[in-house]
Amino acid sequence: MAANRRAGAVLALLMTSVLAVAGCSGGGDEESPQSELYKNPVTLTWWHNASQDGPGKTYWEKVAKDFSALHSTVKIEIEAIETNQLQRTRIPAALLSSDPPDIFMTWGGGEMSEQVEADYLKEITDQTKTEVANSGIAAETWQVNGKQYGLPFRMGIEGIWYNKEMFAKAGIAAPPTTFEELNAAVTKLKAINVIPIAVGAGDKWPAAHWWYNMALRACSVDTLKKAAKDKTFDDPCFVKAGQDLKAFIDTEPFQPNFIATPGQNDPTSANGMLANGKAAMELMGDWNRGTLDTVATDRAKLASFLGWFPVPAIAGSPGDPKAVLGGGDGFSCSKNAPAECVEFLKYIVSPEVQKGYAETGTGLPVAKGAEGGVTDPALKSVLEATSGASYFQLWLDTAYGSTVGQAMNDGIVAIFAGSGTPEKVVSAMKAAASK
Image 1 (cartoon, rainbow, N blue to C red):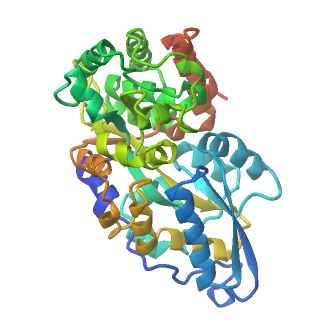
Image 2: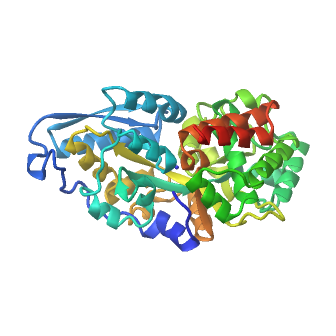
Image 3: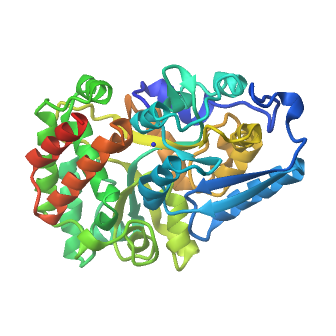
């Protein structure tokens, strides 16, 4: 979950100016030079978030087996953990312990800065110069003070996934480009007894992303940049984001009991509702294409009706209407992980492995040459939208760090629950930033 980018740079991020590495190359670090690699048996523990049975989980299992086949001294033990639990609970607890996983998911930004400050991560600048030099701006999110602490394997932007058949039945001629048009679409969908939008507020972050996008529209680019750098939230636009969100919630676009609905767990979760024709839309990142497959009871039918469009603009808002919210997934090695961990990390982001990842349809790859693996029409729409983007904002909870991010998400979900206010979200963010 990347810094602010201009349109050309964003497109390059996803398609052309990223990793051009060749599998598992040499390297090593001062503690274990290249000549000592693969001489002794090593077991790497690997934590990732492809926790549901499906193409993503199956593919990572293959990647681990393939690497071990290339290097018989390396055994890889995988633990697949749901994203929210992984990011908010398991990783923080493991890093505090004496036995963290060797390689695990990281999302860069302020969250990574906190991990580096606590001395949890292995610095891999020297070992990954080739990969970083060929990654363009993609790898920058996994840097702290100019040093590399991880590498990305996925980058993409957020938008609204939708059911084209439901839109046609409701008489919605084209995907909304403004919130005024989105509100009109909600009204038309209700008229045919269709739940307009599914949201997994039970997991907090899916609901919080609606506020993030409101902030992207209410705040200027300079304000967003300053907030990410200085953790200052004095601009009235942050309160305006909450006001816009509350006004939207008051139109009742979401399913009943959305406050308790999980985000991406099973057919009854928010993305399960979209995947199985129970709701017309869902706001989610590019990875949603893969998770929709894991919860769909009929994948062929899902593929026939699924579409995607960018988050609509808000008329009269000072925010850039072509700004996008997004981020990526990457992996880092814990500080005391063996040198083989870095080699495995480099293998994951190699073009061949990345192309295989793209072919799973679970997200957009980072490596140059891997974009040919993107065949799904909806994911191609994500790439198209990226080409016209003028500004790329990293997920706000990642950009602001875990302390501010958690307080922010809690405050936003309280608005969804009817117990919070736009002002309380900003107050909570300021209080967390002062700690």
